Image (cartoon, rainbow, N blue to C red; front, side, top):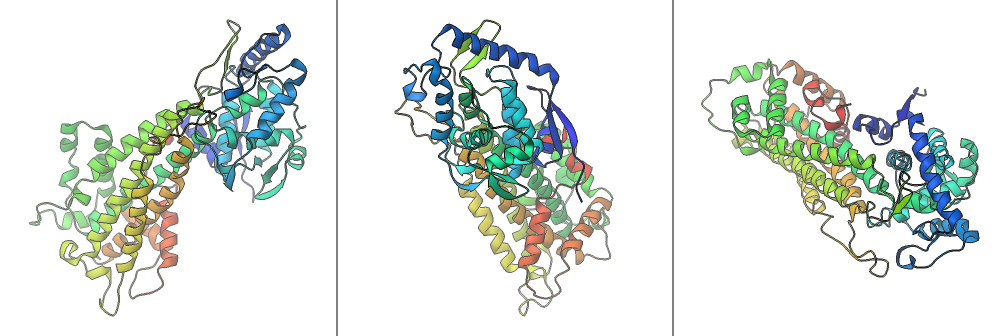
Length: 514
């Protein structure tokens, strides 16, 4: 049964994170805001004027990179742009998934529509038609250093417009020329600067980083909920979540997380049952949830601001300024902002998993949790969650290596003309594996915490957490004795990367703000 998609009007320069998230999830069709057409046409007029007057301008009638000093004759300009696309299509590895490719295409449409690229409206309209028809270019995931833009992967996108290479429609790979027919698009003969405008840009790095942000938001939300469940399971203190503590420090993410956890726990009979117990302080993995998860939230929020700007940016080179008739070479293709954003998302995702794994270990340690060893009756004959924690530890530790900053690396290319690069594409791409790992870690913790809560029955948790508990039980049953846990762990990994959370949590997420 097909889901009706809504029509989304792209206003270049002001597309929201919420809209980008809808594009990522395949919920919208695109149209260009009519107000953008005039700027596109003016920039095109500037390029056409330069060609008509025979002025020599980089990217329009010169070679590229180290060959920028080579002037190209007018009758070879179409060949120049076609050769650029063909020669730069050198990517390898697995093809990027459709959700990422949708973001790549949308961001490229936005960038070209800013009126600084000098392309024909036909190029933009062709990309929109292909997007709306579900015709996705096959873009290999490897081959970009994040400056001069994402040249190789964007060349593979551009091949589609020429009717070259392959595309994917409903998961099936077909020749690009057939995909063009499905979308009612004719193969393009690229005009002056159009090939360079398509290839130059940070759209692939940005799309991958946006995927990391959107998936990172999910594991952040899951980690907060899992942490609240673990607090209930060990009968931890709610005093460290007192708003006055967090106001005294003033860190906004910390303040918001403390309030959200307090909302999650509101009305809990488990909390009421031990308000006056003699327990003084809980371990840091429980007590410092606001401080750690709040810092993660601040990282995600900062990255979200950077990536929203970049998704709306003109990251082409050179840029056309039609008000003065100038075409100016710069460096907006350098994806350093994206690389930094990806790196801080990586830090957040790694820490969400790291503190979650420590809470899981706490749950299994009967001396600290007061729960049965490894959360199972008849320990000894049953091992319970013992080895599930080993899996979580392996994943959390893998993320520590993956969290090493990608942005600190650089290798010169193009005969040292491009002597410093961002490595943003790798920095952003590795977030997919990290979010996968962390979703599994927080899922295992939540499964274990739900098990722990069962040992406190008939006491009930809060209404919000009881709803979550019910969702977990729909996925996995109580562990009364040892059984095959791998399918349960996969179910809980899917829970950890789901998109449905209590409003107290959902409202914190950067992309929830329209």
